Length: 330
Image 1 (spheres, rainbow, N blue to C red):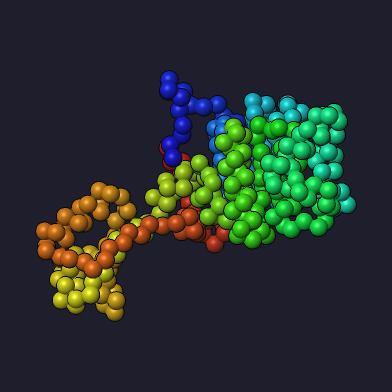
Image 2 (cartoon, rainbow, N blue to C red):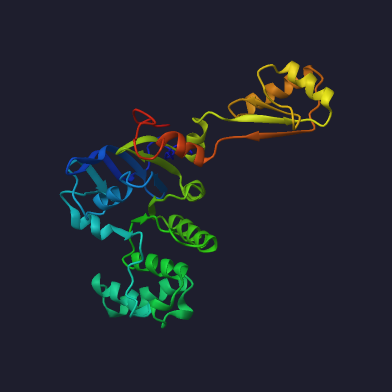
């Protein structure tokens, strides 16, 4: 979707922004000049193969490691010069739940409240609110070690929210979860954003990015190779087509003659007509069929999905040679 603007034409404030962000480990360049702008109150998804630099990006933005070059701001605070301000404004959920298995769910939340110096009364109020909000109030006094993967993830995110952060970094939060727990997590993310929180999500589940993200960036070889909404990214990948199916061999032969550029499927009496998947192209095709007096038994429109986008942009996932430079869709 296009970047949201205020009625007076101004863009909403950026919750996270980077300019030329760079990071290397020895002779390996992990981030090679990353530019990002993430509006407040949105979900941003960073995609990329293993080793692309997703976790390193999160670590820099959450002040866990320092960048070698470039600038970054989170919630209005410079990551390099005002790290305490950044830490006070964010929550971070890593790839593995950061729970103390010897403590109960409630005790884990109260421990986080103590670390944030909320005070006993406020800490208990906040813990009770989050236990209820995440549907784990009935197991508040059970040890975290007894929880399922989905419950552990919910408790982990609840702990992230104890400090009421403005920006939450979720680094592959649903890895290892079953489909039902993953969808519960998606619902949780949507609820957070509806409350005004900005979510920075890294994931390898392309359906997850498609379902949640207002904007997606693909990171490969240390560079942003494409950025846009899910629909914008899909639109730049060739492969959109209309499939026409026929039951009458004579009608199929007539259509094949009238549409010489179509790909034929003789066995299934079907034609594949390339296009951009848009309404104008579909309308033009229907007009051609009508003028030729062709009646297809069925018609379906096929467009690339994020799997196709990911594979096209990242190549084999290791060389970073799919696209030579960032292509930002506005």
